Length: 105
Image (tube, rainbow, N blue to C red; front, side):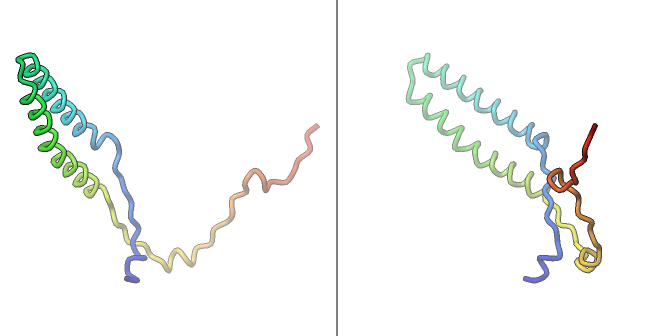
């Protein structure tokens, strides 16, 4: 369990990586809604509701699978050298509240 502290996890996922998946899923939803409205006009409301429900039930798992696999593909584990990090000294950065007051005039 101690070996896990020697790695740094970095997620490089951006919105552009899942943008196409969202667009395709929205197109599927709008097509199913248009098919349902067509069946509503044909006086078959039970079939319309069943089709929308069936399409949602069948597409949501694929959407979640696509999101999860895309996320997992963008997680990086990089090795960290702990000895090098401990030996380096960092100088503190002065924040605005820590600066000395200066008189202008």
